[in-house]
Amino acid sequence: MRETLRGADVEGLERSCAAGRDAIRFGVAAQGLEWAEVRLTTCAYAPHRHDTYAIGVTLAGVQTFRYRGERRLALPGDLHVLHPDETHDGAPGTDAGFAYRIVYVAPDLVRRALGGRALPFVRDPVQRRTPATAALAGLLEAIDEPVDDLRRSEIAATVADALVRLGGGLACDAGAIDLAAVERVRDHLATHAAAARRT
Image (cartoon, rainbow, N blue to C red; front, top):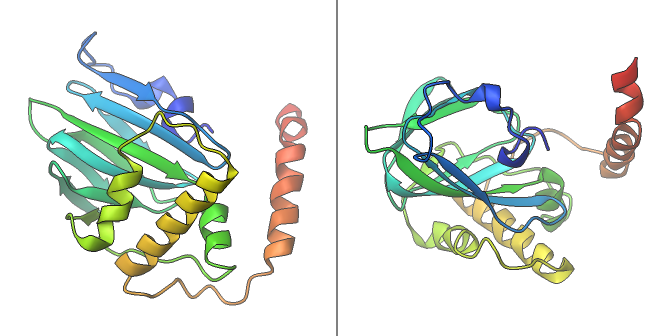
């Protein structure tokens, strides 16, 4: 996915990067899931968006990012929850830099885990460690473990449950959605994406 770190456009990182101080390490990927561990000291992300949920934990330092019109700060142990299609940037909050681990989760996995209900909405993107975030934090601990279909379903259920809890039990009111029709459109677009680029 172009929108996740694995396919990140290097032009999205500022050119002041110092060799050896910034790093991205990718974990095991599975359909609809992608993990990474990132350390940034001299680099920053330009405004961008993901077509997935981006759920991360700050491991060290101070992480700062602009999201929904406000500058946010995440300290070590804080989780951040960014919704699909929400523009944000990212930078070290101090000269010491910061490190974080992140998982990108396709919204259709969350929707399936919710039995087709509307996707939850978490208003505050920075979440302190609480019982509601403990399960999400656990997903970010072992990014190199293989993910089979059963584990993928468990991860989706964990994310869906945590997002609903963090959203106060409320989901976005988008009206009735014909999930079968949306999945057919998604499949059609994925199948014909290369043809659209040639025209």
